[in-house]
Image 1 (cartoon, rainbow, N blue to C red):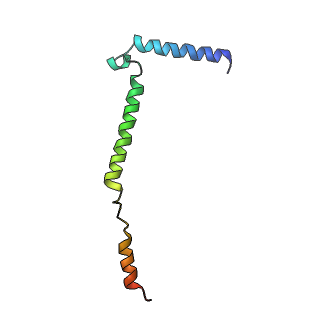
Image 2: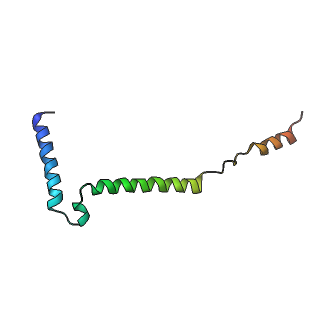
Image 3: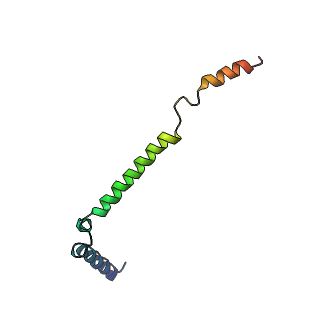
Length: 80
């Protein structure tokens, strides 16, 4: 990138950081990094909630596909 691109990016970043403290509508907007932490915690809640729901409603018990049932059926139907 050209030098003036970097200057524009740095100036806009500084203005964003300063503007965050000067003009905010709610108290949490003035806390540095609030939305980063809020997003991270929200993603953790979504991941763990999805994991809980998957275990509760989707997953099967470890012995769901038990071999003993199929072996008994094979013995009964085996012609040998």
